[in-house]
Length: 238
Ligand SMILES: NC(=O)c1ccc[n+]([C@@H]2O[C@H](COP(=O)([O-])OP(=O)(O)OC[C@H]3O[C@@H](n4cnc5c(N)ncnc54)[C@H](OP(=O)(O)O)[C@@H]3O)[C@@H](O)[C@H]2O)c1
Image (cartoon, rainbow, N blue to C red; front, top):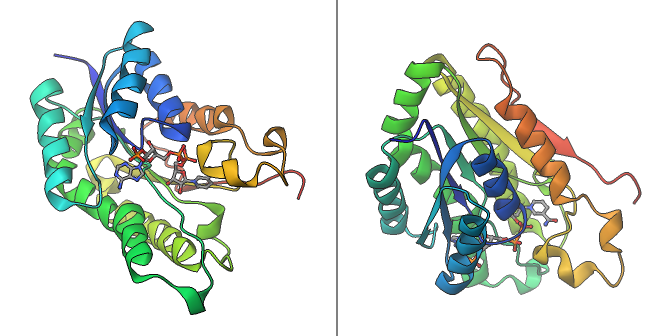
């Protein structure tokens, strides 16, 4: 049985892929999760070729049954969970007058509803890890849009504000069990999610996935007595 294990959602691309590589390099067996099976398999094979212990489960985190299936598959494979990274997310822009109900529901389900479901399903394994080393960690990827309301991205913003608040609640509820939670709140990160912007903002002026990885590496190195509830990543030039 592995010494440390993690689940990363949205692991086939961008932030999730690089955080998976970090966790694997730091000795975690990682279950990678995303919807599109081919893209996910390719990302997983890339990390396997680098020598890391990773597996993959294709799933839509907005579907309760899928969340249960991911956590069960991870438990069967590794039997423990030290780090849960709730990172899958989508942003669908529109003015409030043109709000599309389906687009709103996808964002609510993916960015927000999935996170409490993952906590609930993973809680027995997180509790065991917390009892063992007092350093179980849940990382929830919100956004700077979860700290400052964004026009034309209002639903995205609302879901990310909710992630910030939910994470605060989780710390008040679970820290005594050795389970820490941290929200990541980045501005624009150079990933496929921001490709649509790159004509007006060069990728090199954005936050890099290596910056997010550096912060997660720091979170992994904290002693049991220290929790960092939230990290803001701002653009140095706007
Ligand atoms: N890039 C930014 O500027 C930025 C800034 C602040 C916050 N964030 C947040 O950072 C997180 C990661 O974004 P990214 O920039 O790395 O984007 P990305 O490169 O587009 O990656 C998104 C990942 O999430 C997966 N995903 C999307 N919907 C899913 C669902 N319903 N179920 C399972 N997996 C799903 C995608 O794979 P499939 O499509 O195959 O499912 C992909 O693996 C998101 O929560 C995003 O809101 C990004």
